[in-house]
Image (cartoon, rainbow, N blue to C red; front, side):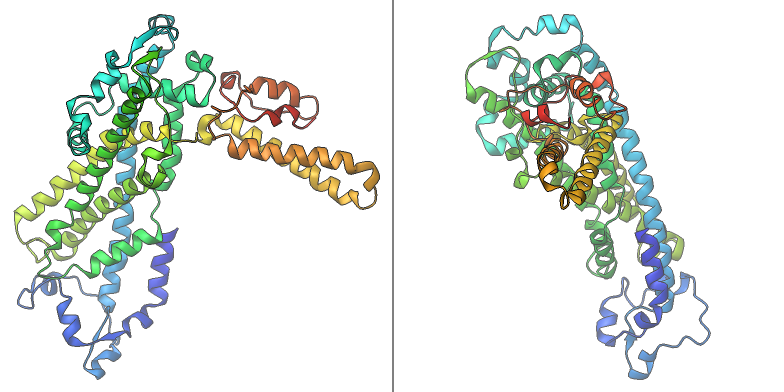
Length: 460
């Protein structure tokens, strides 16, 4: 939609844009090639403009963007959008392929044999557990060495079985009832969360379009941007992957810091404090930038090859082409198969859980329930002016229920570690059926929800 708007904006405003004049000295400094290089001029496809003469010629100036340049920009915008969508699809497919391995680990964690071998009442030395041995060593005493080790670790078994099971256990202990371990499908929850986050990744925000324009404008001869720009997404994705590994290591350090002896399996403490600026979602925006920048590089490469052929000032040597394509493939594989699955797992270790903890049917039913409560409150308020004495009690009751039901839906992501009330979806369903039907609540979602005690006094 945004791509269509930009294209329409360029079409409608082409007269205004081409009338923007800049001094010749400035326009000459913006050329991607030297004047002697005729690759662009000779091999560019010309745009038939019979009488479209720029007003800038009479002022001895050059247009900021010519009609031919606008036509080429239209083609590039379309090419960039196509490449970005293709990149996102490939990324999601490779990520799901990697996460498919986790399904067998999830099933193993629900077996009786696994529950027996991981007795929650057994005391053990923290440093003797597999998770701690993997993440702590002599190097964990130095912040610099931690980052160095975590940098290389992302290339070798970025998400091993022990990490998945330990983080799964920590998530359940922090956000759900302990007995949910044999019922809750953590892998499916991660998959739904990633699909929700993917809605952000597949889009192209105005800020990213502005960034694309910036890269185009500053593709100036002598800056060699065709050499260093492809390395930006590689550096960012390696930095994000290293940070995610550092977060897991710091959670292991917290376990040892709490005591040398633990009861049961190691329990990691989910918290936003471990993420940059206490915002786990910031990592998603960095991944989004990497995918867009990588798509931009290959889209620009394809577009310039189509417009100007080879060789040209955009493709001077075969080595330049090899660098761009190689880095594009490397970044795509790293982002899709390594970093994004690791992100999907580690960001569940934030302070809050996501609405995807519910199945789609349950979430829709709860929101429908809340909407019904709001409608009853509104209806009650309309009649309150004439029958205040008879309805004041009911109004308070409905307002109280609606208020806390909103709190239930909007704040269910808060950790219930400080709450002593376990709330059961089936119990809510049975209680609510006295007045309204709550369709779509599945038995599979039983015992996965904990929230505030006010839900016990919900709509009745």
